[in-house]
Image (cartoon, rainbow, N blue to C red; front, side, top):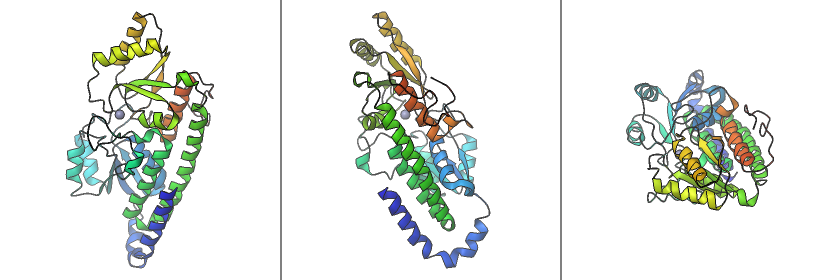
Length: 325
Ligand SMILES: [Zn+2]
């Protein structure tokens, strides 16, 4: 919460000084919602939670879209050049959009909301020097840092509404704290020798670190790396040796390699099931609970814990998950 306190304090100072001069202009501007374009659905959700009625948010990447591979379309470019504010993740998540976003930042307000996270909270990246694992949405504790940053950025864009943004961010963070408590409680029920999470790519490193799971992906941190045959046979051996009974598919990555893994284990007489589909790098369908950040994580936490042997509430933290387990 230190960061939020800092944010609130900083905002209070920032708002107090220019308020008298800017008040009439602000009043006029406050009529129209701030046009925000966000790259991922998760960032769009944070902007909506914090911005409320004061923002109009468009997400470029919908359900099932892989941000490592995504390239901006013509209509994305139009939306971004017309936006008041462009929010992207950073930490090299949007690898194919990086150059475009850098160029755009010379003309528009463009902010990488995860770039400002303290480096000591981030996982180093084996594939590249001075790069970090971008999948920070996988734990509510890190996501709170991003939400605080979104509140700062929206407040800089609309100082007159800073108090509303801070209040909204505070309320959302209370939900994130509740989600974290649910995750701690639910995941702690998974038996110690079943705490192995195997999925298509290495998106769950922070999840593993914070909740005590060994995490193995067929592909690396980016889906752009090769899923080598060696890696698959290595994981097949591990599944068999350790008698791991469930692996997970991801909504934004093809399940082909995961099926090869299951077939490989079956050929050695070990049956592995698909524990469920996880929302790794994109949220669920628009307009559903799983299409929100809270629902995305609730789904992942409940699915992982349930498939690996914990007793879990079938419809998650608040009874809102659409698919019973
Ligand atoms: Zn990823």
